Length: 350
Image (tube, rainbow, N blue to C red; front, side, top):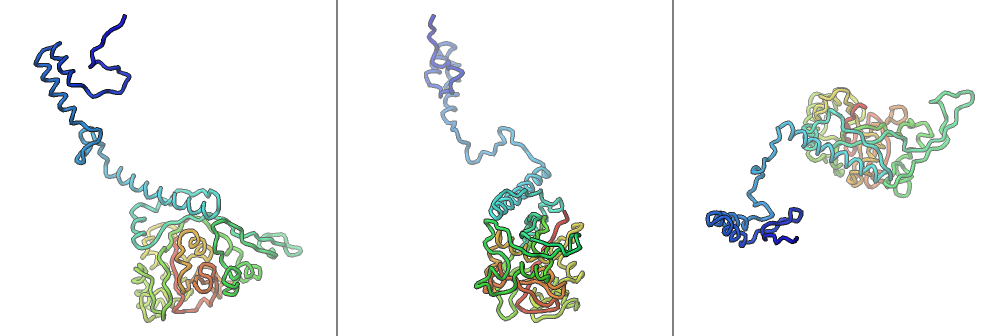
């Protein structure tokens, strides 16, 4: 038996169709003029409905979810944390040519501190713990314990993103500075200079200024007031530009009072077991290759944390005309020079 269905009775499994004005007429015939008028009024409203909410629609009409301040804070923090993890994962993948697991941020690195650090020019980065060189050793005769082996050969590992390796053999004409691998073999540098200690660090991301006459300054330097105060108290030697990072010796930069002042200026003094150091030559090089190409571009030097000849000297480098990121040299630990600056690194505990 076949039924003739009214046009307003639609298949419930089909997408709904816009009602036809004839539906109102049909309702009037079946239920009377009053219901027909109500139907026409309803149809008039439906004609004004669009599939897109108006610009003034807030969502409150359908029960907008109100988040607590704590929940909003948590979501904002997770977004920032996620962006940092993603950036580090991408950078390490490009450099090493494979996935490098990136652990969660240190629990002390809160959203509020991260934003404060960024405002001052500091950024969080992760570097894995690994040796960046292949080392061939031979134990001295009659000795088998580790630490006394003679180093026969040392070569840097190859990674697709390591465009500028550190050391003399990678500088223009292979004629500037020192060769890290040869200096390790000669015993002037500890083999650990070829290793990454690994972990999260807070790195000074600002540009290294070009050398002029020694009066150059790091832009918007949050350490300048601390340096000026240290010079006023004669903890470090005075200088023409009182807040300058230049004309400071490694011996002065190693002082506990100096590093404590830097930690306070960087707002890391409140973090337990946080170390305040200079970057190691290898860390400076890798972060420059991965994130900060500008470290390769200016003709001043920076001090590094690595000791040379058991501490009588200190590594430095970064001069653009002598190899940039490949430039590694050394100077006396007591040396002050208007062309050698520094940057501070905050090292989180494992």
